[in-house]
Image (cartoon, rainbow, N blue to C red; front, side, top):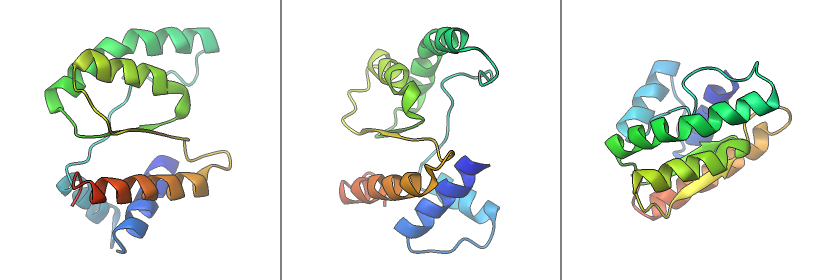
Length: 132
């Protein structure tokens, strides 16, 4: 997927490494303590705008429960349109995070921007000792 491909590229740039396979990257990602979660656990892309908004709003509580259970030190939101919902979930989870970032989804011409901005976020998280 675009998300996978361009996320791997940003990690490769930041950590100055070439991954031998997709499995190597996923192990690396996991060993750093990173994980991916969705705001909506049901696909909403096919829905109309109002219905998508409703699903996003209704998914905030579920995400807050999942966030509370893993207590991340940082959150990177991929897709700027969902940032307000993810911020609500972080607040409801009571995490008090100061490291919340919002990136464009890596499609429709945003691929290079995504890699660049994610790499900058990763460098900042390394400097803050959140990532090794």
